[in-house]
Image 1 (cartoon, rainbow, N blue to C red):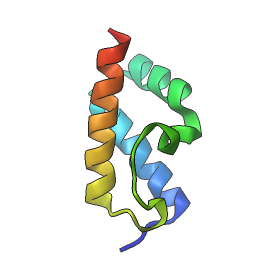
Image 2: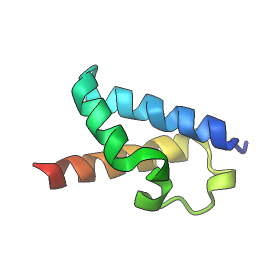
Image 3: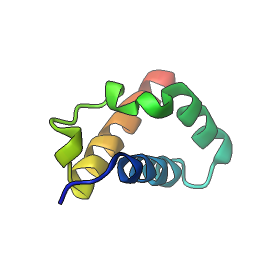
Length: 71
């Protein structure tokens, strides 16, 4: 199943919210840091054919690494 750009952005947003566990300040900081260029920061082989599961896994790894670098 391939996802549209809008679906990928929605999944990114939901992953950020889940990662932040309700901390709106942290979610806003991550969103403003990464913006809509998140795919420049993460390794997705083919963004137009990425699966939900693959994107969520990649996002979790990228956000965890990003959070470690911020500490």
